Amino acid sequence: MNLIVAADRNWAIGKGGDLIYSIPEDMKYFRRMTQGKTVVMGRKTLESFPGGKPLPKRVNVVLSSNPDYAPEGTVSVHNYDELFAEIAKYPEDDVMLIGGGRLYTDLAKYCRRAYITLIDAETEGVDTFIPNFDNLDGWSLESVSEPLETGGYTIRFATYLNESPEVYGK
Ligand SMILES: NC(=O)c1ccc[n+]([C@@H]2O[C@H](COP(=O)([O-])OP(=O)(O)OC[C@H]3O[C@@H](n4cnc5c(N)ncnc54)[C@H](OP(=O)(O)O)[C@@H]3O)[C@@H](O)[C@H]2O)c1
Image (cartoon, rainbow, N blue to C red):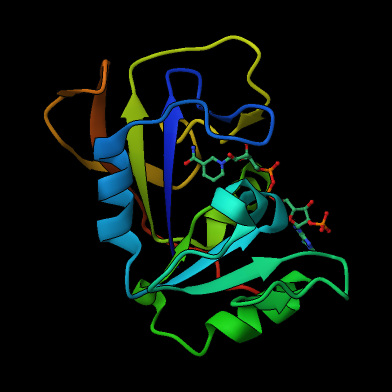
């Protein structure tokens, strides 16, 4: 499994149940990196999409502790045992963790690569964060793009590598 996320200078990723920044170039990158793949998300991230609808052209696996939660067009799982049994059906590189804060924080150690859009900005009143991948045990910066000025922001597409991802259940 790999993860993809957009984070600002303070590693903030969300505010009031939504994204903090809306950057079309980053959305394009996200689409390119996830289309045709299996995307894994928490219930709150699914609810943040337009109309609460799953993403087209992707298998949407959604985690909720509510046993009755089964939105149309998704595969719902209710704990990490069920999640890992589900994603074992796909090649590791075809599974992308797409949020939110809770899932990134819990599951990063099982991921090999983190595709992080680094947004050179900061905002007050944010409430959802990811860990600082520059200081996270086992992770190192593998590559980073030149800065791109877009939509009023400066962003860079970074890839972080976890040399030894943990295997779930071991
Ligand atoms: N910048 C980015 O790239 C990016 C990407 C994605 C999301 N976001 C932002 O992140 C925020 C949402 O993140 P979040 O941390 O609040 O929520 P989240 O991780 O999307 O979802 C949390 C929910 O997932 C379910 N869940 C999590 N762990 C579980 C477990 N072990 N077993 C069963 N269910 C589990 C629970 O649902 P139930 O309550 O139903 O049990 C929990 O309330 C939003 O602001 C969103 O816009 C940003």
